[in-house]
Length: 284
Length: 284
Image (cartoon, helix red, strand yellow):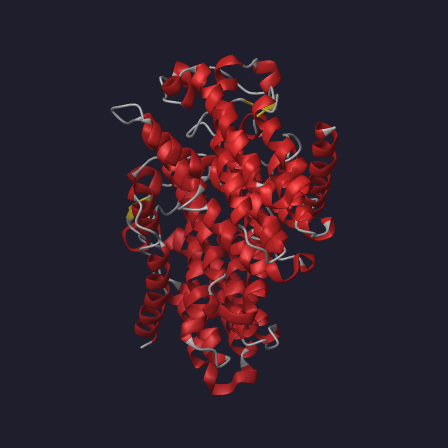
């Protein structure tokens, strides 16, 4: 039931995104390839938080497509040999393996640009500037890119990171975009974003703990990318710091917190509660 | 006289850009480094076209800073080993030489994000969405990144490009941002952008021909980057296709065209005419 709704809604965001990629040879092919797979969780969060705030899909599908473009750009660049050096993503060769590194750099660059272009669409309405400004903050030097820079610095640091440092790193690297996604519906409706922010803060951390657990316990074929990389590299993660059992307990507590934050919306928010539960139950 | 005005005005744009880079370790240092040098021609064009349209510096300095951020991001990524593989830029080591490739990828990414954030500043006013939308088109898959993709494809093509193909490539790679810069003042003033567009189309092409001439005739120490690369790589350029003398004649004709396009503004546009003349006289 939840899976079907996730697939259907993220499909709307992906169709919008693919409609905005102009047919232009290898670059466009690689942009479509880079945005073809994945769960589409961020775009789903945008559209569900919009629905919760009474905002139509015809408006919310643009920011949903935009956040999927930003997420895809970050993965394409993160997979580069000079970054995480991954050959496999979502069960398929990464962009620099299927094409080359130059194409991967340009695909990421063009997807980021496209994200901001999507947010200027007329249908988005009066919230356009606010969404662009908050997305730039979430994606840039104080958000996602900051998290990535901390992650890279940690690889050459003399000591593995501690728990507080991992939380700061992940709040940037994965948390910032998830938070923007959940808040986007409130911003579209000019409503108070606080409940969505509290939901997203807990959700983002649960999401990352679940990712760390998948890196240890997941199956590479199901997960669709290499697993065991963090432990192999001696990298500090929630699992290495807490142990697998305490990490699972912590993730479950965070999901409860995320669900509680939606109390003001009552039963209307059940889909977003399902999303939070899904985040720690998924196998990829 | 013109040089002094260029230095002063581009300094305003750079100060605005540097003020927006948050103090955050190596990433911020490398972002400042990547935006410290250069002529600042694009930001200058934004502010001068704004002045011509009666728009205050306090408004135009934000789009001026934004276009310099986009230009700097494109240089940092273009210099990467998987792209043009340059060690020297503006007389200093490129970002991936001074730091590393991962930092260069992230610096470029963060500078692009910052550009869009700068355009959301309140001072920019009602033109914000229009400037963001047009910048995304100029920088993305139909503009600059398209030009870069064509440039990379040309390196492995069986035949050198012809003149029409070089013009298409350069219209994307360097022309699109120069055109946006010149049109930004008209957009800020809600004025007809046609005269500025005609000016910029001629100027952008003259700029690129001058760059090709510098690659053949310039001194690496003055130019601040490696010269002779295009001829060494057997790459088709305006100089290789037209010969140096005809290329200079063509550039001078284009500057005349650019100046003529400003006729509706009379003597008020003299600074922008000086800018066009400067573009083909510069030695770096």
